[in-house]
Amino acid sequence: MPTVPIHRRIVLAAGAASLITAGAGLLMPARAQGVAPTPSMRGGSNNYRPGAPVVDRIGGGGFWMTGTVRRAGDGAPLPGQRIQIWAHTTEGHERDARSHGATLTDANGVFRLEMPQIVPAFGQAHGHLAYDSEDFETVFLRPLMNSPRDTSLEAHFVLQPA
Image 1 (cartoon, rainbow, N blue to C red):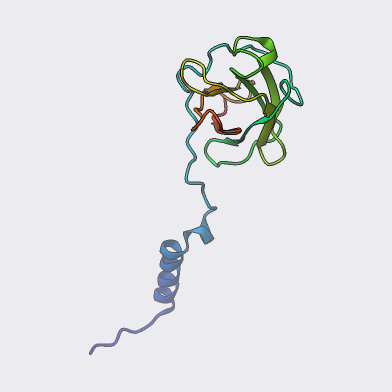
Image 2 (image 1 turned 30 degrees about the vertical axis):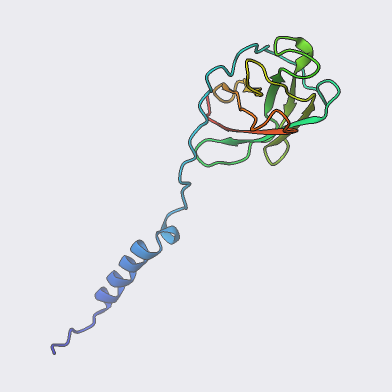
């Protein structure tokens, strides 16, 4: 069996090649896989009211609308983002101003707003949510409830910078 003389150049080249192929993160910064932005849902903007006030609760409460807001690309949570929420509830219709309100995300990009129980409109129990500030593209969501008896609904936003 022939022997190959080991020279300093061979050791350095082999070491560099193994670092590049096996541990690329050591030579280059880690990159996010790419979190895709949330598309607006059809019918999500129905009865939208620009500038709905930030509120502690809509009406008498009893139902929770919750979710998260993250940035497209790296998926980082976005604190301080305004999310407007409205729905057809036991206390009012989607078109009523009293059925609209907004909330802000916390330091972890989480929002939570209590509102009256959502009831079916046009045969479906659903909520409406909007992100409509200047830093990111506008997104309207219209998530459906599994059952009209559910007492909470989640919606998650991944926003594309404007």
